[in-house]
Length: 114
Length: 115
Image (cartoon, rainbow over all chains, first blue to last red; front, side):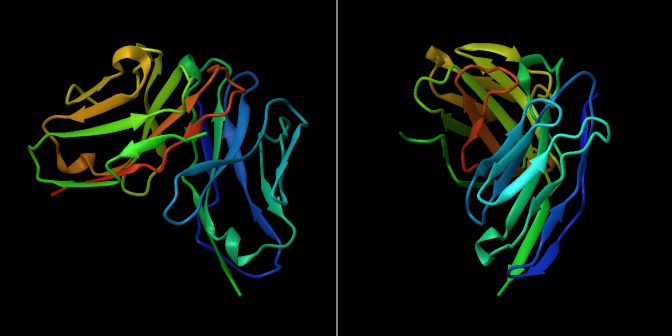
């Protein structure tokens, strides 16, 4: 079945550092790929998405490119802020997913220190 | 526009008791999903409603879990009787069209603790 693997955290960074969170997936066909973020005390929010190969999703300075050849969707940000401290989840909806259910990775906690 | 809301935000119950979680989706969203995250593991799909009908309930762990969506508006998820392994965070999400590219909007979650 479909699965998502993302790097385990926590990831601790200093402000203005470069952030990369690796995400790889296993799915048949052409899944849609998502990054969700959960800030402390809040629910999941969609950060960005890409629905076909070579698409780049971007939002709030974050970017991720849908790489079908490497089955990856790595999240990057060039200069993080303290407010980026959160848990980040990579997810997909498989081509053949009944009901369009999301399949999530385990989440990566990011802590940005001033 | 109000987002997805969930009630309660926290619930602490004893093993064997019953708990009912409620989710109010974004107005006009026909698609409603339940997910849960147990013990810091992956967020797992439980089930999907389209209006009042269950489209996919393949993720429901066992028959102690009952989900309803009467009238196609809000949904409830009942756990009866609760077991220790049911502890976790239960998320509800809704979407308008339900397609694979459609965004699912999540609520803040209900943290369930079974003692």
